[in-house]
Length: 91
Image (cartoon, rainbow, N blue to C red):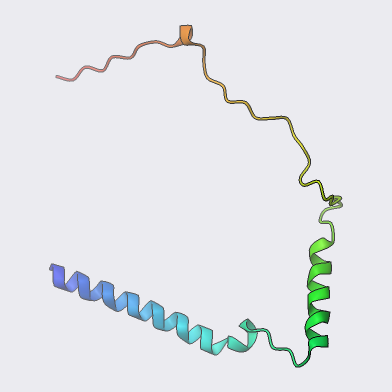
């Protein structure tokens, strides 16, 4: 394979991927897009979604203070006196 073949194959794969993505979007656009007929339907849907987001998962309590505090993570390294010099020789 020469360079032209590789470039053409790459371009063909790129275009086919874009077209496949667009085709899937058009095929499933009814499922991907949210359609509501009234403001009441939209507010009901929003209430349902926000209620689902505020339900605690795995019996955890949600507070406005953020995540629970844990012990701080402190970076550590071996002491300088335990470090040894490594010499790599090549011939």
